[in-house]
Length: 640
Image (cartoon, rainbow, N blue to C red; front, side, top):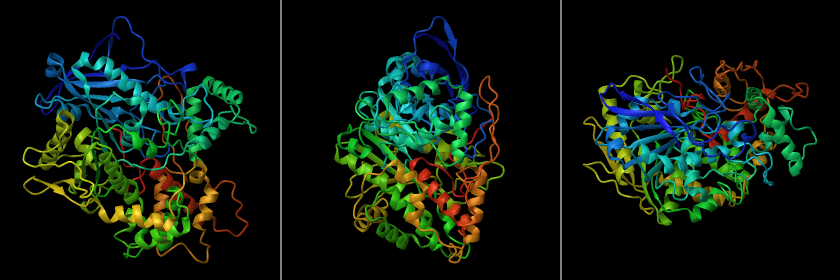
């Protein structure tokens, strides 16, 4: 495409690498190209300097505790970052890992991945794995879905198409930087792993990669064809482009709205997106986009014809534990809160008999050792197992794992005002990723260095050889009848536990059999069923002020208040600084979802807000990874 000039780096661990940061892979999606599929970058004359990160794609989200104060943003953001070494550049043919960052489809960028960690973990001469990270459009810019039933000039999964265009760039150009286009491994963590999973079943990605690493992903969560329709219509109206009579089944009307949105300044669109998010409307990522699309059918249908490739799939032992706040200080369980969460889960998974399913769920999880896992079990563990089983039966090869090392301690740092996780709370979601890319980097001990080297070696061996087995242990491919998995934990002598069997066996039986029988099977889930708070509240049933809301109502209210401090759907504090290149981004005062409630009707609206917030949290949790154990976002944090 053109000449580039990167830079040479030598890390504190004395690893040498060459980095090329901010290489354009597509034309800037500006003006008329906004909301359209990415167009391959045109050749350029001369040499462009790519020795430092450029810009992240635009985001302005309240569902994260991150303050992106060190990020430069622009709508001109479609770039890849390449990390290579001398051996790859001279000899060529190095295996490639293509990393997709997380951020719930709404925030963050690959600039979060520390250069020194990528070089140290993947580019010592004996490892020599070429790393590519990719930026993609987020929020309304990447996942607008105004008209689910119509084809329009706006593609519905622009963010996913960006990732695919980046993979096409790899196929065309990576050999010039020492990579082998026939040895590409797709890798994602958290919501980035959900994206990676979706790309493995998409018919548009055939031949673009050959293996995949799926880390801590929410697999198997229903994606409605009209996912994002409500928020997209709300967004268009708030931007002044769609009136009250807008009919999104009218092709001409849809194009008029899109033409209007393309003329609105990007800064204003970010303000609008922020405002509607404060009122509970959040872009929840991809949708089923029909024939010729990225996801022409539901993921569960695409799985039936998915390409049988090699995959490494796994979770951490504790993941989110979003519902541990329902365990009271005295060890009792807030049963009313458990019932509320289980009711919303029943709606989310589309059980025919929602009440029976919710009752069965509540009976099982109203125990202090089970309550924290109401969401983790079905969303992380069970679906990872079922997806692995399905892929294996389709002819694929799966290496299943669980990261159980609990003494992460000070190696993982969330921030000065956020308590660290104790060993009893670890390994929590994203804690293992600090060893791979340096996210939330704290202070490493000698043991942490050993964990980093050994854990990253497993990934490198899978990328290079298709088998992650350590030198002194055998990691056997998944046999569904055994549910065998590799337990990544480290004893006092720094040895890993190795192979175990019956990965979350009880939870698989409960959610894949017991709950299905109790709920009478499932039906397709719609956007409305997930987002219509009135219907959800009706399913849950609002406890009155006389009945209260459980044994630790005071604690729950405190937790909810704590959550709202860091971001969510109730009260949001806004911190966003002026970060857009050349802009003066507006930040809004606080807003509250209770605005407009008539408090004279005798209803306990604080309880209503509490229940609605629980439901919003659940929907967000199982559509894209969100808060930490203490109801704070703990996926990524900016580094200096």
